[in-house]
Amino acid sequence: MKILLDTHAFLWLMVDDPRLSATAKKLFLDPSNNILLSLASVWEMAIKTNLRKLKLPQPVIDYVHQRSGRFKIHLLSITLDHLSLIESLPQHHRDPFDRLIIAQGQFENIPILTQDRIFDKYSVQNIW
Image (cartoon, rainbow, N blue to C red; front, side, top):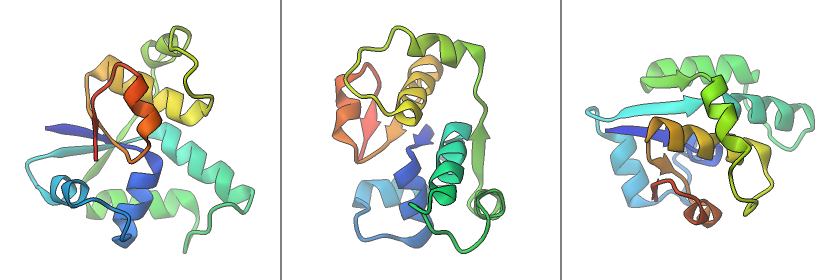
């Protein structure tokens, strides 16, 4: 099963944060699942690190590269098809990173692992 991680899900999974659900952990650790991280999440982490809203133990690219390799997480590129969906998404949520992740989940027909309940308002499968 393919699963797209929301940014916070990726960050919490990397440190086994207690806010993670049992379902999230189980799906992440199941080797039969294909775990994806959007480049939108990497972009979001880079911006938040620059603004000092996020502190990581190393530069974002190194952090993502090492952990994606260790946990077999695949990076999901941003395509024009993904971007084209953003235009038609309802305005339930204004966060541009989340909107792009939602568009990717819709276009690729991939469920999103997220605690963010605003995602439920969109036509995308959410898991937590």
